[in-house]
Length: 236
Image (cartoon, rainbow, N blue to C red; front, side, top):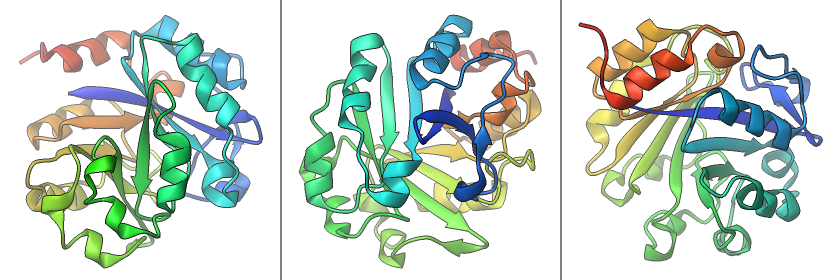
């Protein structure tokens, strides 16, 4: 299983995401870092564990369509061996074109933001990652995205925003549903992962990857546990 840590950035600092209530996210408090400066937080993450991929949600871009191109470009400059999955609230092809050629990035096409739905099926955007977003029991986006699983890209995030940062455990019912729909896509679980037992359950369900934030910052999952899941060498 691939483990991908999540960093939520708002107003130039890293914040703690909880329940999708973006207006009230507080500055990050973590056992892994004493900083809230994004580059420093990433550096501390990578010192603690050799992640090959990090997910960044730029909340100002998602909410206000304010792309921080300078920050995005610095990511590869500082961390050339790390791939960054960036959710910047892409809505249109023009948005995609502004971001897609920045070195070291894979852009998220999030259902809650996407306006030009044909981006999903276009060969030019196959390098992107689709995020299927839900909140309060409702799909955030156009239902036609769920009706075209054959057009989904290689990686598909399944994110229930109600579970994000809430230590409720993953939304297994939703994950199973989306895994059943997927044709040739890897399913990436997002939201609610608490501990090693949750990672074990996700693995048993055939989930390919997981986005994790709060459990790492609380110290609930060790680097050694992550390594075992990443290599497949888990205890029987």
